[in-house]
Amino acid sequence: MRVPWPTFCGGSNVSQSSIADDQELVNWYMEPSDVPGGKTPANLYPTPGVESRVVAVQTPGRALFHQDGRAFCVIGAVFYEVINTAGTLSFTSRGAVAVDANPATICGNGAGGGQLFITSGDVGYCFNLTTNTLTTERASGNRMGAMLDGYFLVLDASDSTLYVSDLLDGTTWDPTQYAQRSTAPDPWVALVVPEAAREIWLLGQETSEVWNNAGTFPFPFVPIPGALMAYGCAAPFSAKAVEGGLLWVSRTSNGQGNVVMATGGGPAKVSTFAVSWSFHAYTTISDAIGASYAAAGHTFYLLTLPTEDATWALDLSTRWWAKRGTWLSGSNRYEAWRLWYHAFAFGTHLGLDGTGGTLYEVSETYGYDVDSLPIRRVRRTPSLFNDREPIFLVCLEVVLESGVGSYSGAPVVPVIVLRLSRDGGKTWGAERTRSIGALWAYSQRIRWWRCGSGSDLVAEFVVTDPVPFRLMGCVATLRREEAA
Image (cartoon, rainbow, N blue to C red; front, side):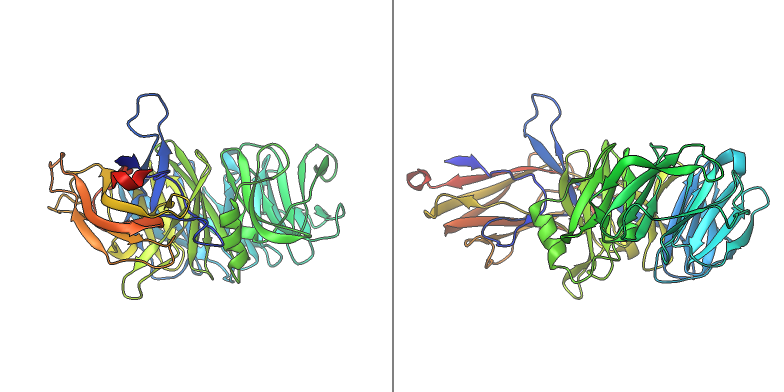
């Protein structure tokens, strides 16, 4: 009897107990079939690889920004412009900046102002896009910056104060133009201006509020009545505006660790119980960094936790969570995916290494990770379970696109590795390897015979070759007399 493996294409959902759910998805993403007639309800597609474009001597990467055909980044103590010369990228230093443990931030005031405002090491800088000069404008109290309606904004987290520049002028900061938090007692920790909304989101430790430009004099910004929310922020740099919404790692008066998303109203929890459990188990989440990119119809919110060496990815198109990671074969573990900062510039996706000084191009046409490391992709399935009755597995067949070539064009006969657990993920059998076929071997079938029996079967598939592994499903052949 042949039966499809239930919910083969899904996300990461490692529960408190592995026998409840032990699903894992690393360096793949799930895409459901949009229209009737698809052979499977969903497929697993590979996350993009990277290729080095330019390397700085300094480390680490701390910010990446693109606007109006120009790109900039902060690496270590240097503010760089990324120069594109006929498709070849290079760095040009535009000045030195201060450094602390936080990421830097970069924002612009458009053609009307022709300036960028940079926060780095708690110092505020203004960059003139016409003269290419960087000047120090604020000596302290600059955790992060933003722009709304031509005004640069900066948050001084030390005393929960919002400062505002003159209109279209980041070189002038009237010391009387500020607001301190008074709506709630907990201090502001993060400042975000979502791209699709003319609003200032000020996230506190346990509550948050939204301000807008009311045109009042002398200070133009005021809190929106009724826009106080009982969700604060546990990780200030996790806050990221994505697709008209805002996501961050939340904290309330009762606890912390849920990922929430606000889209025109109050925040709502988007982390699953399993994801929230993972965050609950972490020792440090306050240094989480949020980033995003959109490709192939999907928009991803990437959340990197440097201390925990982990990266999570939420696909906003499907609301499924998965993991990203760079595989370290020498220590047999994943580290956080090192592209902590992203920008779409010069018609391509760029990612900046958050631990090194390399700017990478990110594309599904590349088959390797940072430092030309292999990309290790993992799918660990939900259980094949029949009320603790023994299941006799004659054959296991994974359905995927065979006969595919390598990203680089060099001949590769890729393989896929299977290991089985018979007790819900507590213990595992030996690895068993199968070829998915050489180039153009489109009819290749990938099967494992004599898989034995168990009462709670979990399958884990692993690939590392630089080819586009696209998985559609898995079929189990059971001994007929035991199928009932």
